[in-house]
Length: 237
Image (cartoon, rainbow, N blue to C red):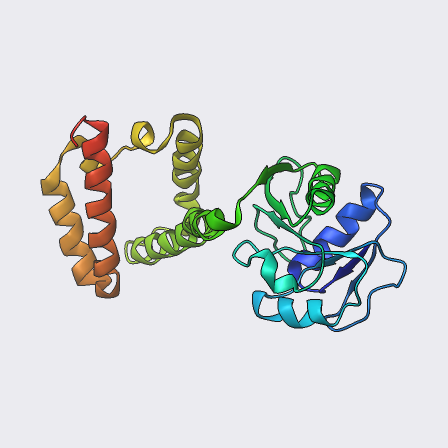
């Protein structure tokens, strides 16, 4: 098989597949022609580039992409599949494929089997995502990872005004995520809103407004969402 795309994912997944015993060429730069002998071509390129890169590949091999948001139609005439690892890839660090979830889909049984096979080779847990569910799945992944990072960035900025380093918040964050993993969101919720201590929340809001006013809108939205979550935990509709 050939991996096309030498970005974060391409440079991580190609050696990982090779280490798992898969014969892989690449990662090739975007626009490079895959080997004519390749039975599978995996595109690790941006969503905007998938259709263009796929259109340049001659008919024959199975062609897959690694986008969570794009459907299979962007692969044009190819017998296509998708393989979206549910993990973050950091440059310079081995990607933690083993044990991670992986969304897969395929236009045919053969294409779907190829996606599942690649996921299995990497030690990932494959889950098939229907085309109609793809955007909801990808939005959930964005909330779980990207938006979480945004929230932690906000916490870091406010903490800095009190002379508190980011590292001191890390055990708190890890504990919260671990509790959510074990218990689910409602049972894992702690803090003043979960206790119904609105006086504390009002004091927090005033301080956010004074020290980091650019975060006030985010604080208000999150506080209200947390109230709704706490209400469900307490049995309210």
